[in-house]
Structure formats: structure tokens, C-alpha cells
Image (tube, rainbow, N blue to C red; front, side):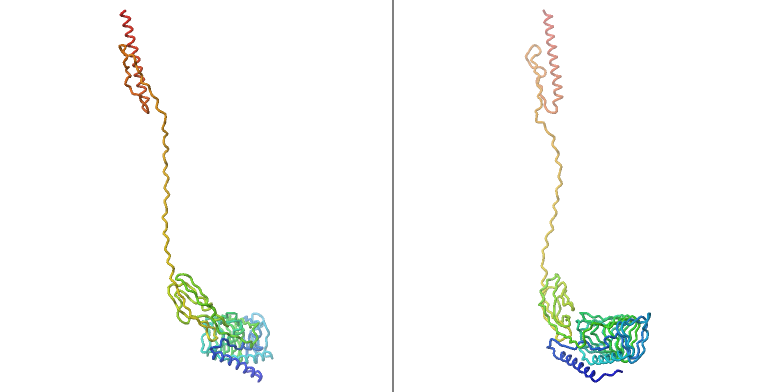
Length: 437
């Protein structure tokens, strides 16, 4: 085991005491709005290593190490070289001065991480958790198969996990970092050994007292640093973070303060939205800690948006809290009145008017305005016996209109008959007179 110099031990002790004092002060003073802790743990020269072991580095398959690879005090490095073996995109340090110094710096970092006063204790199963920056401690830490752990913070946020015994990361698991944070500032201090399951997507630097095993196809954005035993790999990709903040950079955390005003009243059946906003570092999350929201509304814990469609008229009181792991949480009491929906009188639907069908008007037959021709009634002045009496046509009525034609014909025949009779009588008389003479 590597040993530390008196000067390095003094630095370590002062650093640890400073961190502990700051954390204790922050926990004890709930009225304080801001707490400052030390920044990323100083890895020293070990920061450039993707893999560092004490006894052996053993690889199976085409593992890729993006960073340096080292071993000290052991000498066995196997499974790296030309394809299909592993590739190191960095420098291989096998039992040289650089590897020895990296192991010493790993020991210092391990001791500093182990000395931090936890902000949360008694954790074990990490699946489903969303954790703000802080120091988390437990006996054996585990992330179950197919599980996920979310770390929500800012670019300078730091997480330290202290496992008194083992760290077991299951197969197909994920560690998700949000809010601008990164793997530079995630550290896993493990009291014995660590294992990373098949296909896991792991983030952070493991500082293991004993061994580290990464199984088939696991990917690591971070570092695998084993103090006293081996690192075993199988078709993995390990990428040592670059561009990290300088160790010891202070990380400011500020307790949240709610800055938004009271929400407006709502109307039954009308979509509603109000955003609760808060300051603080890291970014706070929101919860309803007393009362209930109006029926139909919900609160998004990450954005602070209260939204939905209210369903029940009336006044509802509730309390919203904003927290980010730095005491005290901010709270605000609200009352939202849901007004009844306006009653709308329906407009009667007009009855459609039937368009009358035009009836064809028959064209009248023109009636002649000319009077019917008058047929003269023939007068017979000659009567038998030479009298001046009326002839046979006397008393004949004149006819007009549609029956005039046949009447005229009859009348004409009567007239002709009368003329013939008169002529005949006249001739008889003349003949008689002649005969008498």
C-alpha cells in the first residue's frame, strides 16, 4: 500500500476538516441562506487515468480506454495491444514513477472522500432516486438491474457517494446527470469492491479500496481507480472526463426563495396555468406540502407549473415548497378560487323558410273587342194580294256570336224563298190579268 508524506497528510487533514466544518455549520444554521463547501475532490495526477490498478489490469475483448492506463505496484497488464484486443488512447504506465504517484494521489482522494460529513445517511438502493448535490452514505450501495439514478444540479455541483462495503451497479442501468452538471464532479468512495453490470451506462469516478470489475459492454464516463487490487474489463468503453473545474474551486449553494406572485383565480371548465418560480443553487424543485390543489389541477415538480382544467367551483388552499437540498426550503401559501362556468343561453335554431314553388299562370286567350257583324233582317214589302204586309222573313231574329253562321244560312234561304214566292205570285196575277182581257 502506498503511504503519504507528512506534508500531504497535513493538506488532507486540513481539507477534510474544512469540508466537515462547512457542512456541519450549514446543517446547524437553518436560518442561513447560503452554504459553501469545497468543490471537486482533488485527484492529483490520477485525474488523467481512465484505469488504474494496484495488482493487475485484465481485459477481454476490444475495450477502449480514452485516457491513461496504469498499474502500481503490480506489473500485469493483459488484453491490450493490437486488435482484436483493447486499445488505450492515452499513455500506459506500468510500474513506473507516474503510476506510483497516481496511486498515492488516489489514496489521498479516497481518504478525503471518506472523511466528508454526509448530508444524507442510510441510503442503499439508488434506483428511481433523483438526488441534488451532496454527500450520501450507506453500507452497501446498489443500482438494480434496468434501474436509473438521476443527479440534478448545475455545472459546479458535486456528489460524493460513500459505500462502507460494496457498490453494485446492475445490468442495463443508467446514471443520468441533468442541469448542466457533469461526470467530473461525481465520486464513488467504496470500502471494498465495485462491479458494473452488463450494458450499464455509468458516470463518475470510482475510488475503490480493493477491486473494480466492469462486465460486458458496460460504458463508463469517469475513472476506475483501484487502490489495492485489480481492475477487470470486458469489451468496455472508459472515458476519463476532461475540461473539469480546478480542484478546490468553491461550490456555492444557495437556499431557494420563491419569487413569483400569488396565482390568479380559475374558472370551471376553462384551461388554467400558473408558474411558481424560485431562485437558488442548485435549481429548486417544487412540491405541495399542505392542502390540495383545486380539482383538475396538477403541479410539475421540476418546472413549478400548476396547470389543468378546474372541475369543481369553490375556494381551495394549499402550500407549495421549493427545495434544493440547502436549508431552509422556501414555502408559500396560496388560495385559488374556482368560479362557476358562465351559463350560456342557447340561441334557438331558426326554422328554415320554404321557398314557394312558382305556379304557371295560363296565358289568357285574347277576346275580340270587335262587335259581331249584324245581319239585316230582310223586309218583304210585297205581300200576296198586293198588300204592304210583312214577308215570310218577318219576325226572324238576328244572330251574333259563335252560332251566327248557321243562322245566316237559314235566314238567307228564307229570304230567297220569300223572293221566289213573291215573284211567283206576281207572275200568276199578271197572267190572270192578261187572260181576263
